[in-house]
Length: 256
Image (cartoon, rainbow, N blue to C red; front, side, top):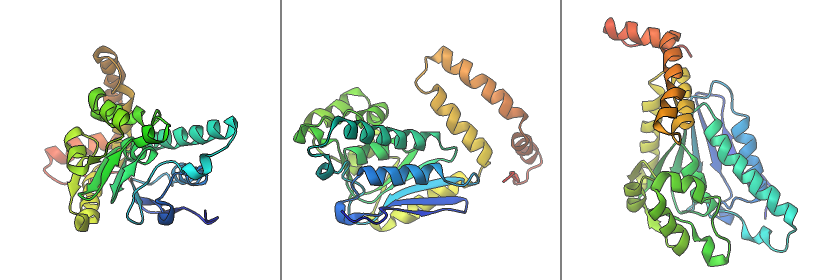
């Protein structure tokens, strides 16, 4: 493998773009790439409003680099999967929504990465799979976010068979939000980003955190979690501006 960087970052504005950039290795999530990705996610400026996570070349990501996983000691595997988990949790911990731009196949940990993003837009040529069973390595960590999106039966179908799921099926199952012709992928992603950026970044961040805090709770616990959040939100300056703008029939001006 090349010793150069495998993740490209464009930050410093309201929209940050983090791109897997090692197409000659099918954007495999090697230990080095995962470490770079984690560093990129955790170093984004505080004023980042949306993150677009994409990849170069024909493949979004083929998952872990099996070439580096042969004949290693247990400490290597422990560290590799710990870093991978940290990446997925970092995506969820970001205040800014993360949109996956999926231009090609996303398999194993690559599929996990798509599922861990808040939203995903896929080209109609993309497909998804958790094929670890084919090489004797069950996709145990990828199944965590995938199961939460597509449900038990569908997740088990992917996990136990390793069979690919095309983009249309991924949309039907809820693994992605939209499927568009490959030539229109960037336009579709930019349109989704623009829709999000219409609103208060502070309120979007608050809402993202509240969503994940309640999504796996019982109904009673979910209400107890989000009711104080909504009450505090109502007193926030941006909510008060939104109320005034609505009543005054004018566009709101958010704090940025």
